[in-house]
Length: 335
Ligand SMILES: [Zn+2]
Image: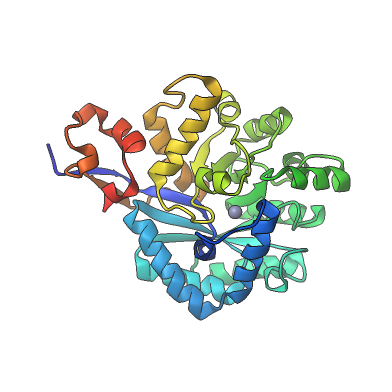
């Protein structure tokens, strides 16, 4: 047996890298209390700090088998450039998912107009940065912004990433403002298509999942963060039944381990169905790699290798290694 097993690199399709600093802190009573701590941390970020700290976290991602990261970025343009430099330093491929933020959050998150936001996207593209527009959420972007950004992504053939349905309150607020649920609003505003990735979709109802399936959109699940924040259970079976593609993200980076994300994802499906092997292991590994690359608009990305001499894999038959990786290993097996 070879000592190393080559594998497609894992793709982290959704990271807010600065949130790594929040791990281990008492994070408040619920998502909204955690968000206050997150906003304080976001306010402390400087381009110099991003350059330094992102490089350290990107090295952790790289050691954990991730070879690509989609940085969902809302800390302003100078910090976006610092993240690009940090990724180059750490040897990880980066796609900047530049967040559009019309309202709420901190002043540094916001652009004064949707034209100003698209100007920021163009500025990064002109510098050779891989970038995709990312309306932060229906909380942060009104309908006219969503329409313009959806049209821009469509005409430029770019991915579009957006948070939706992470928390029930967001859905209640969307219903009050627009009379429809978040994914329905995204569909109405031209933001759903085969290059769209909806992040979380935790509380999506059947109609919203149907809209995702009809449009060919993907869902990015971030199971360790969703568990940590008390978001709820990802609708794994509802996604699978409809053939909706799934990818994964490290999101708040409370954990950096693609195997753990996949194990949690399958664990949710097993607990809710009372069955085993709900998602075939080859498909799980594709969620962690090829689907993430497709979500970020990449055809090619670097590979990784598992250490077959690692104690976690000792004595495992060759044919069982993929299962053993997902269910019996941590990311140090890629070290
Ligand atoms: Zn996020």
